[in-house]
Image (cartoon, rainbow, N blue to C red; front, side):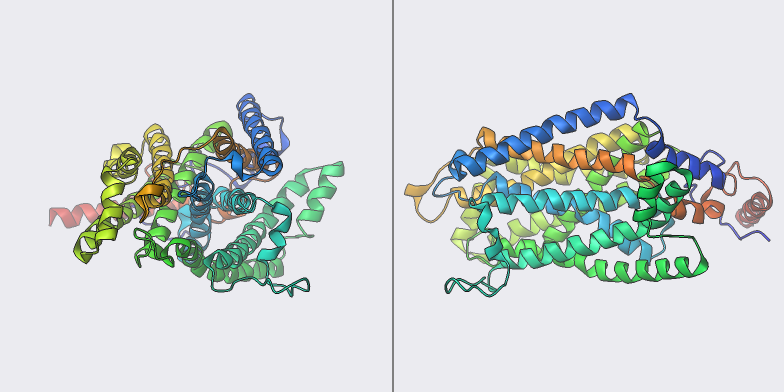
Length: 478
């Protein structure tokens, strides 16, 4: 008996796939020799990772003085990069958790890579505060444990300590959620493997057999973790925004920061997912599973969140003017017309103007436009973090201490190297596990495959679609 199918439903799996085809296509990147494109990308990422390791060792050996921080701007690229990476890590949990709870089928093509992106982005982010400590070996003081060597205790009134709890919780839940989804697919790869490789996948798949009880527990655990993850999407970047909002510095001390930071984090996270999806579908030949419909759905979210961010920018300017507080007004005047004007207008163009191009259906469904604009958005979100930090600190209450901050080669190396670390981990992941969820793709095949729905559908589903079109035509004639 066929399922009722709406004629307007989007095709999410192309190529007339069978269950066997899905297993073959999605498991093969972990089984075959890497392609030339993968080797080139991995080599570039490894080179930047080497640069990152060198910059970290140089910083710890020589000290924070190797950075161009000064008495006025004591937060620079380091904290800018930290907030930027945390923002990128948001979209994975959003796609996985919230869209799972709402049973959105288009998530199945992109959720696995987005979850992996969350894990790797948080790893990149978490290293920047540790490096910024200078004395990295004393990092244990940030944890709340009884100190028997003196009266020094963690300050629970500090949002920097709140960051430790929020990010570690977010990372732990996201890691569990990501790995839970991987277990059935690791078992699929295990059953296709031999020798030592089979034994390794046997260990990591936890003896999964695919029994009804296993699927029942898997589904229950996924829903519980999704329910826990959903408020974490809102809480983590809210607490990161408290690093600024709980201060008394004009330009930071504002209540709009929490929702503004959350919207910006989702905005930048979805843009990074788009970058990864376009590269992944090309390098691993996954165009049948990461379709134009997936790309278009995510571009719609980028338009929405980009518009929210734009409203937040204008609200900040309005409230600064409306408050009548001269120091707040000067902070925002300095952002727009001060020494960092180029960063402010770059932020406005990249984050507010460029996403509006996605109102065009042609651009929204274009792979090359999507790839280009996703990079533009992430550049703009980096500018946003830099504008918030540098412009606010460079002009304080005392004109004699005003200064201009520009990064040193060490800071530039740390940032570019962290991007290398991110792609190094992601490319390794594509070789060790299916980058698209095999089990979840199979679960939607008969309601999202092009042989069941769409203009080329066959069989009973096609009769249902034809009947629906006939009814619609008759209604239009009436």
